[in-house]
Length: 317
Image (tube, rainbow, N blue to C red; front, side, top):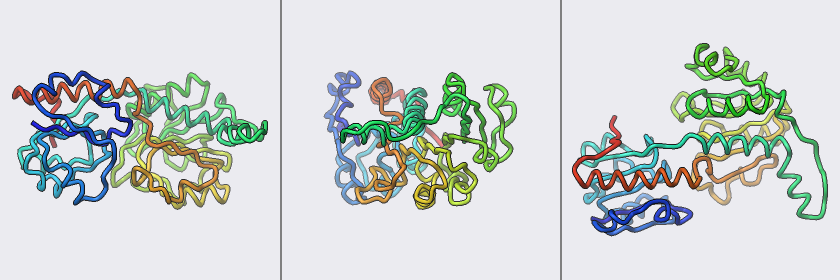
């Protein structure tokens, strides 16, 4: 049995779990780089029986799966992976399994980015490094209004953190109910526009879908306060990049922080890399030691269970 671990950027997968029992039954190959070209990806993956996939870093489309005759098992980190064509995998007799996903890391990063924006840490750090001192004035979180777009598992944790900072919290999404907001002690906003106009900070916690693609664009930025900040640790295409750059350059909003992008890794020449007032992190939302231990520990469990004829956490349509 040949097993491939994909997109292990930090070369830490084998340190994050005990792979001994898997190695007793097969050969493990770890890939630290990301392959974008479909032909190159197929050539790389063709020999393998098992693929261990890190979230949506590598898309496994129907065309790719049909070109991998040896593939029998895919284990993705997380409970779902929209980048895997599960229907085609099922047709081909390929089992797809997942893992649990801790829910603390992304909300914590959301607040790290929010605090960095609020206290102007990018500019202050740059000033210190060239011998300077204070160059700006910060924004208090206490008493400010946080608008959360999406009040699911992660959005709810962000709401609780915000309340601990004495922030006023409001929320909106297309299907959000008053009952859900009451449960969390959050103000329910009737429309997206109401939330944007009221908020000093806006953070996004929704899945990417046809409905949320381009959810924040030119019209939405016009609704925001010129002193407001936007944070996205969800999915890149939810925000229109061009509209964001225009909003920052024109002063329609005070700043933004992104952890997710339309294309990842973000191309070196991408204009987001050169936009003022924008704090960028390389999709670190779930990249923590505890999360990796869960992801890869349960990946090992899934491989062994499948090999014993009793697959666990199977992902089906």
